[in-house]
Image (cartoon, rainbow, N blue to C red; front, side, top):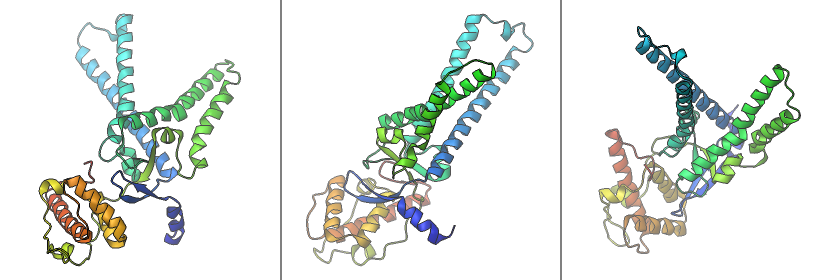
Length: 311
């Protein structure tokens, strides 16, 4: 596919996200194929991980019992049932913990999503909450895995000659309905995304944008041409934002109108505890941009990265 052919497809998935600070961020929704690929990768990682764990457990237990008179097959029924419950709990916590821990992290993505270059984001622009992540993952099981498991069980039953009646058609309709759900809305949301208030977006590349070419405070950290003030920000004040906010601020300085810059200036001042003035917004923002960029680049030289304000 040529670049000209890819561009319209990407534009169809282009959206804007307004953060609680009032900053408008351009985003690109993840394609349905990348989401499906990420889920397949995650399921494979979990399944192979659990299989490796169980095999290692059996191997270790066999080695410990080797040379003794203990026979695992002759263990009391209660002990065998207890071990089955423990293994089931391990599988349960692995399945849900895998998604919950990783999607609540600063990257908002599981290993499968990171490989395919996508992440989960809150549609309101805020930070992902545990409630939202739990809801979307519980709904995934109801949408896909429960009907899929039911269909497999019914297939085994039919092989043994048992009649399941219309249940097979009901499970098939259930599975098809939720599987095709993302194709019937423009944001490719599944039912879990709608209930949790999330969507899946392409993850921006982790690198700083080209240096902004501006005049005044950002160019040489000089004094403001309007007020003569030399803006200097401390470590704590610059630590409130990361690379993502830096790139957003750069786009605002390149393209935004004075009214938008005034809103961003007021937001940053409140965030860092400054009293917002008026009339010198661009000089303030250029100075903040230059000093924030210098801090982030300096941290990167020592192997420290701050992807966004939540990191």
